[in-house]
Amino acid sequence: MKNLVVLSGAGMSAESGIRTFRDMGGLWKQYDVMEVASPRAWQKNPELVHQFYNERRKQLFKCSPNKGHQLLSELEKYFNVEIITQNVDDLHERAGSSKVLHLHGELKKARSTIDPNLVYELDHWELTLNDKCEKGSPLRPHIVWFGEAVPAIEEASKIVSKADIFIIVGTSLNVYPAAGLIEYVPPNTAIFLIDPNQTQIKTNKRVTFIQEKANIGLERLMKVHLKNYSIKEE
Image (cartoon, rainbow, N blue to C red; front, side):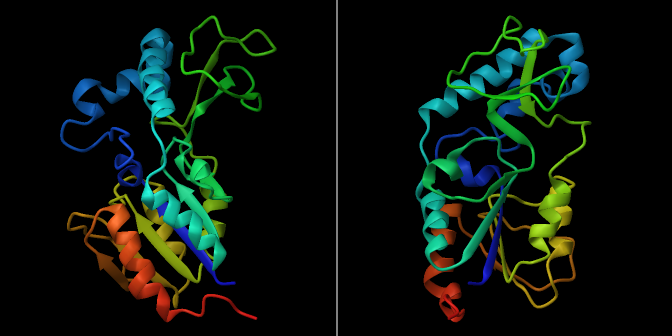
């Protein structure tokens, strides 16, 4: 099977009702990013940080995967699909995708503030300072905040470097280091960008642009473009 790698962003989950950060009326209108999503914010006002992520987590528990998530899951019948997502939701997994790498953390997980290796699954949406790890330290959201390193970026670059087909969906490639992953795509790999807006990409690689929302764009990609590839190799 050919290796099909997907880089997904906020636009992928927007159609499930997940509010995005940068769109008009998005979360940045309501919150100052540095006051809710940075190490300084956690030190200054951890209660506000928990409030912010509790709201997002509560919303996520009410949302379901959309058709775009389901289409990507279906592609596993024909390709070796690996998804690299900038999203912190679990909608790809709930749709059935088996290989998902989260660059920016996961909303339904929390981790120790003294031992980053202690990570816990959450089956409820509310997290407070009373919730502690087994070493007695308060739990924080398992999220990569602004100003923090992205631990998974090295693994992501290795995945991209083996892609036969590379799909970018729901992201305008403005956030680094995720935006730089396109430079790891092999020279002869087909690159498809699905975005409803005109997007300028800083790359000299050839990109096929599909100006649609995630759901419609992925449908067109499957019906028109992926038909040109040998889906299964004996």
